[in-house]
Length: 270
Length: 334
Image 1 (cartoon, rainbow over the protein chains, first blue to last red):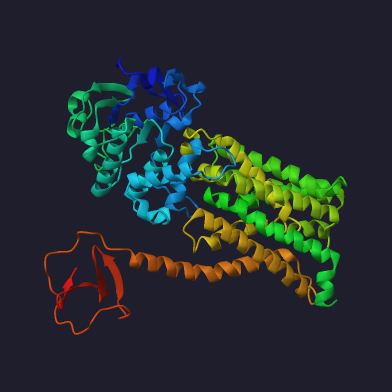
Image 2 (cartoon, rainbow over the protein chains, first blue to last red):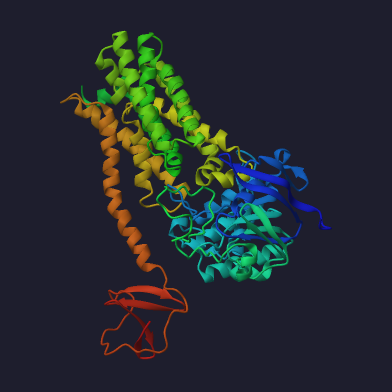
């Protein structure tokens, strides 16, 4: 147990999706101020774990506590910032960058009240931190994928949370945008925020990470000092080097079982 | 009847009030439906409301209230089927489409209502609104508008990203059901003007027209409400004048007028998007080493006919597929 108080913890957590165990035996405590990278191959359960931590996936066993409050009793959601895994920030109707970011302020706004000056200042600052203040009037759909990820991060920032969950913010994002992201997260870290970052590869985010947790097949396989990208995929984690950019990897671990017909060759052998 | 007498006639004034409120309320709800990619939800609810109208006609109670109740029940059912997740939104809508329409026609047939009576509700009608109907319509439309605009930040956040909204502590299911109920109420508000089978057009077409030219949600919803009002009141007036010559229901004229707006806006939107794409600044730092353009008698400048695009601290002119940047007394290839 760390000496600092826990921002989020999960004890003996298990998650089933459609009756199929996806996570099991998860024990994890993230101290206030930690910058934790949750890593692992595709389908290792790292996104599922983050979704369980914010209450989007019910646990079949165990308990999640946010700031020492059981998840079910937790009500101060403005302390949490969540950046979901999404390819785009756009929807069926045009929305400006400012409007999407302003939605993040709802955690602190009362019903039927107009935006206060404090709200506007927080939205403005969130835009500054991700470096998109000059695009605030543009439609989000006109931005590149990496810029849209930065909009999603600004949305989480606007609520001025203490604990961030980011689900693969760097997936499919080009290097300049990853660097802009790293800048935004460094600013967060400097303010003492706690960050739980799901990532397949850290890239420019690597220097920020204090602690790495590697998942494999729904369990925690490593918890300790930061790893370099290639170490995460070392064979001693029992995981071959499977990148996103390797198409049709035969050893691909997935939530869903691979059902083959009797005439197919056994899994993974060709 | 002269135009003056027409507009002075009480039935026409009632119809105008209803058209005005319909034109405001339907696109307001419709914007949230389109945002959630449920553009056809209004159609599904409209079909379900046919059953409600038929029940009201057969039992000699108010078709309006019967339609409100049945439409709300149908809308909540669509939302529940959708949320359970196994059936996607499309299929859930289709199931109710057919059930609602078939049920309505069967029930009204059993009750012996004439097809003409039911048709007034299906395609709108100028002359059949009573004072009570208008008062109920005004109350319902005002409620829809107040909730849509008052809760706009919450509804926007939920429609934009449900997962984020849930982690932000919003009661996502409540807001989803609320949008469904608001859609059901605005369908019944619009039923006397546009008619149940065409009501969805007034929820969707003004939004589609508005978003050709808008970049933000706020301007989209405002423009959709203006366009919806113009189409709704304009279509009603056209139908009223046309009825001197032919038997014109207001529903089709309103919808066609709204669609005409879209047909005008679409090419403008295509042009504006193309222009925005062309004028987006070039990536910074992408200029190569010094590479002068060949013989270049043309002098680039403002209004020279070549597209000027910002590039770092200077301007590139797009010239026959090349990017020319001025350098001393010649042009560089960028």
